[in-house]
Amino acid sequence: MKAGMSLDDPSSKRQAYRLKKQENREELKHVRIDASAKTEKMDLPRKRFYRQRAHSNPFSDHQLEYPVNPDEMDWQKLYPHFFDEATNRMTKQVTIADIGCGFGGLLIDLSPEFPENLILGMEIRVQVTNYVEDRIIALRTNHADNNSFQNINVLRGNAMKFLPNFFHKSQLEKMFFCFPDPHFKQRKHKARIITNTLLSEYAYALKEGGIIYTITDVLDLHQWMAKHLEEHPLFERLSSDWEDQDKCVQIMRNATEEGKKVERKKGDKYVACFVRIPNPEIV
Image (cartoon, rainbow, N blue to C red; front, side, top):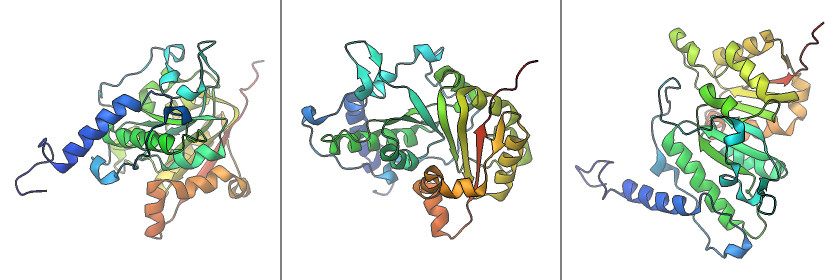
């Protein structure tokens, strides 16, 4: 970049790259990409052009779009391959959610492991969401011959505020919370993604037997999440033996960008998984 040129300068390399990708995104993000489309191979997006602040205030008004209720959500736009034009209905519904999906590493690795499940990533940061959208568009285009990666997508959303607007009761089978913002200061703990109130919303969206997966490299946050989940009456912790045998745990440990960063630094990764137990009987 030339001296004196800012990132907001339309002639900057980053701005030009973003504008080009935005045009491509607007054209293809809701299009059904398959072998009949005969589109050219696409380069995967370059992460360095999508950088922004690492954290976003979940209590701020981000002018997000969200449905009034789950029935009003147009899932066809995110998963056009699973929309039946004859019945005008989706053939599947989202059953796996990656909350705070970051740059989409977990989504990409989960996709071939769960080809019959629709998997949604929710991310609050604008440029990070754009990156994941562009990544999925490129992957769908490059694998149009076998329809790979049709079962994943991302939306910009705030799960702390609007999760019930997207999901029906007992809709989800799995929820992932991978390397969430630790919010180290005590006065910021209310912004953590695992709290007593939020766990009740997650329990509402999860089916009985559904799993919450958590992983972090921050011991204090790990203890916080485990403590709140253990204290909640609708969750029960799964054993370390179960974790060692579960393929999602193995993917979660190694798929995300944060996980890879921790691996390079030879840091610790703390995992805790909890099952959604049945509602207690009312006597």
